[in-house]
Image 1 (spheres, rainbow, N blue to C red):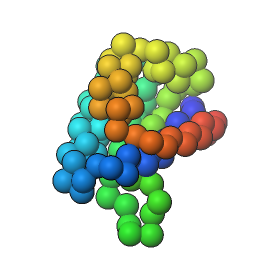
Image 2 (cartoon, rainbow, N blue to C red):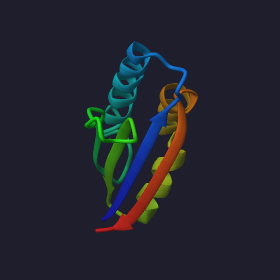
Image 3 (tube, rainbow, N blue to C red):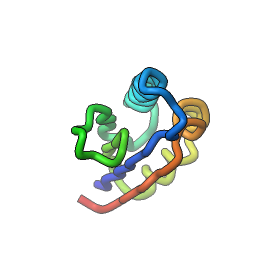
Image 4 (cartoon, one colour):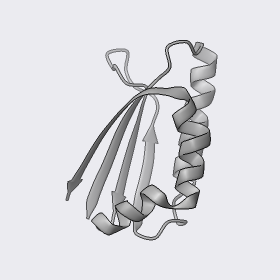
Length: 100
């Protein structure tokens, strides 16, 4: 099994209301991939960080193996969510992939 963790910081110029709507869209889009991508075991988006946080969202996903993670990265359903709900609104992305 492989964990795929992402932290995002949304663009500073977005209002608080815009950020909330964008976070909800990202969560719905990414969690909606469950059952659609081979090897995707679990996917969750955390969007309610404490005030001490310096990231706005976290993706916590688990894949059957490294090949499944590679397939996810180019799967059309994932690419659609990334290109329409995530990339246009984020300024920083950090990723950590590791075996579990």
